[in-house]
Image (cartoon, rainbow, N blue to C red; front, side, top):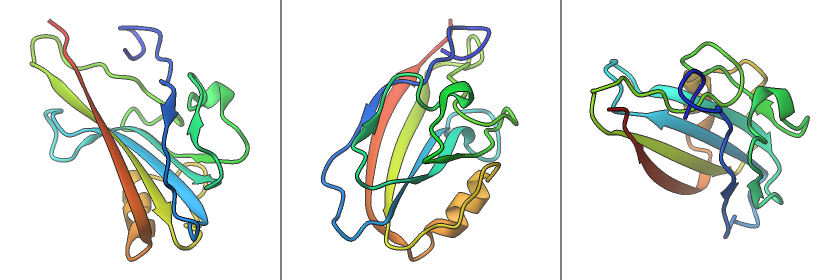
Length: 138
């Protein structure tokens, strides 16, 4: 769980079957169940080499990220991973972990937003993977 609720440590993630033509991977984690007009963004990360098949626990936290990737702003207005902090009593929230394999470099830089990522994905996605998790605070 996120800051103030838990340790706010990004989970380990792994993926496979990245297309040979991929030149970059982009990660996005969001909560579409937040009571907002848009999904609550918990992570955007780009410029991940396609040869990487995953990230270790805490690797997406701003304090420990690799220079091989760029971290963007979350809805918390911070760089790097911001863990789940669903509102108490709001019911279960779905957390969607997405990985995109790109045909061209995204050009994304540190401080990017979800909107920047969506623009970079336009006509540029070779493959896509998704993992969903659920978190609820009583």
